[in-house]
Image (cartoon, rainbow, N blue to C red):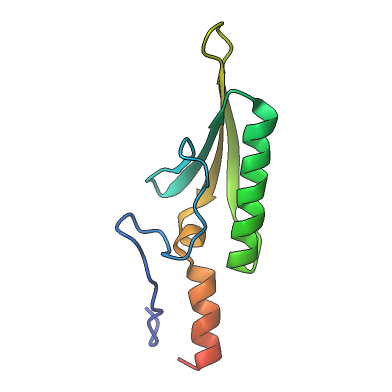
Length: 110
């Protein structure tokens, strides 16, 4: 255990308060150790574009590449209600903002 604890501002689900959230209400960040961040749409390129946009914004906020362990694609191509669901399985510590807090602690000398 470190002599200098790192102060993280987390929400009730353990995510960093400043973590960019997916913009579309159909997209969500799940609650598991490696959290799936879900992007769902009836158009695959649109779901992928939203996933890429979120990754770029989160990487910029994090200050380093997001640790994505897997990308999962689910789909239903039945007539009437097709959908595509892109899930990025992301490191929980990245989504909690640990790298951001560690850099802030180093800058402040704590």
